[in-house]
Image (cartoon, rainbow, N blue to C red):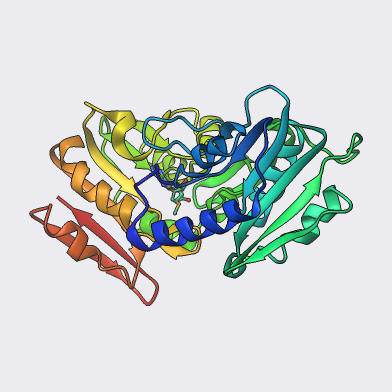
Length: 340
Ligand SMILES: C[S@@+](CC[C@H](N)C(=O)[O-])C[C@H]1O[C@@H](n2cnc3c(N)ncnc32)[C@H](O)[C@@H]1O
């Protein structure tokens, strides 16, 4: 979710340990290898040193590296899969790997015990009979599969993973596209619902930025209340961007890690339910960067509105940057805060 070197201290350390353990388990090679998910950016160069010719696929934009919904065309000899947090995203990543690895090639899945790497074996076996645990090391392990020539259940396109559902939102029922791994499964999260209840709608002509738009819930709900505002939505996840393009056709949708994708643009309002986790680890980096960079993207009189978990010290993050920070709502779970 963050570009290399941009994970906050603890998640950076955790990721480093997971990558190191996996690297100690992986043999050298001389073929092409697809690296799937590599938040620190260390896996690909380390594998190159061992003789592999790595290519990478990430659905996430990292810094100026774009994310893509599906791995680029081309057959590879092997793939590594960094275990994602969401089970559905894991299944999709396995199919993405299988869509590119040649028959007989290996797929290595790695992750930490407290992320569920042990139970990652069952879904791997369901797709690749004979998959097994190749190595147990430190607090993690590597699960290994060989791609058979025939894979009857393979779903090998990104559109094969899209689900079109009817989503009931406060403003109405929408035909809604979602992909595995989207926040709140692409639906209405309780924190987002609280933000939408508490925050007044934008005025006609306001320029609104939906930061970290996920499947587009905020853009759609605000547009229903204020159709004459102008909407831009951004997310670092290429599949969130695809979903919002379909779900919120009134919005200009941009793939971007942080605010880089709207360089030079200013908004009347930036609205967000920002991320606070990188994998399992708490990580305030995206919110901290947003707070620091938002003023340069706000029009005079503009405001940043966020909903955050109750325990997040949001005033400490926003206070040093903004003159006026107002908590409009605090309950046992969430705070809705406006910063001007
Ligand atoms: C808590 S979810 C909110 C999703 C949606 N706005 C909602 O309310 O349902 C946070 C979103 O931020 C996105 N995100 C995470 N890191 C990001 C970054 N560095 N830049 C932009 N978006 C990011 C995630 O992909 C995710 O969709």
